[in-house]
Length: 328
Ligand code: GYE
Image 1 (cartoon, protein in one colour):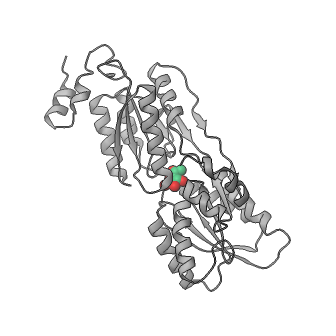
Image 2 (cartoon, protein in one colour; image 1 turned 180 degrees about the vertical axis):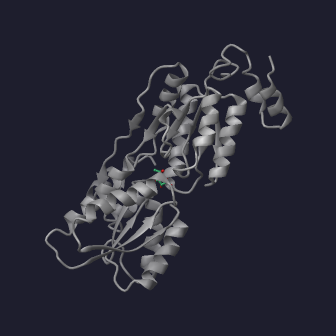
Image 3 (cartoon, protein in one colour; image 1 turned 60 degrees about the horizontal axis):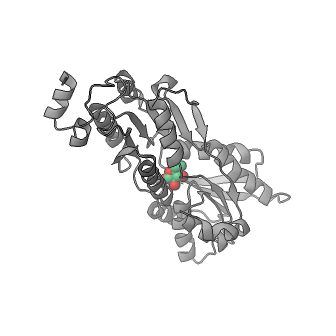
């Protein structure tokens, strides 16, 4: 029963023992399954760049355990090449389902085609790919990032209603090429363009991290004579920027208004303290729905092509009200 593919994989040292135990030959088509009949899910995570990501990883690991799913978790440390490698390993191991959160949007067609040819269904989690051929994956679960950017822009438009002076905005973008960076930028730009008083005077990546958010904000503060608003594509970059703003002797939330996306606990705390003015929520708790979808695709059930997460927005008052129960 050992095919050439298996032999080659064993020889190249790619297989891990637990995958071998599932080689019962009962469902060679759709993956090996766990030796104990458990669904085997290979998941390639982006990395650990933000509080959002940490909460997302926890949600996936905990939900796998409670759903009785055997999770093969791989951390790509922010590199697409590592994700491609991980996906190829999952194919070699013949997991039942592959899920991943793509670091960037482009460049996935080849490896997704390999998964399809091996008859292993793929679920996009959190972030989209730009592949034209949507048959390369079964479903995509995650947020509408364009809408998030729009919500950020709408708050700003409302906040400056009736004012005519120019509003200078600096923007901290997420990882270059990542869906949430592309879309949050586009959604925001689309809303504020209606009023020429809004000017994005500087826009750079802060890699979704606190460290880079702080550092890039320092350069913005040095280069820009007047900054009215910071729009950061996630809380972590906003939190890093707050440190830079305070170090420059300015008051975050007052001298510079701050809008971020995510609503993780640290962000919500800063919001409740008035250091951030508005947060657009993006839920990292995708685990339970992912397990559910994985079971359905494995069983050959039809699932919707797109599963949207439900999200809200928070003002400082709303943050204060929910902070104590905030889980992540
Ligand atoms: O907003 C950011 C994280 O893909 C939605 O990635 C996710 C984003 C999230 O690093 O904090």
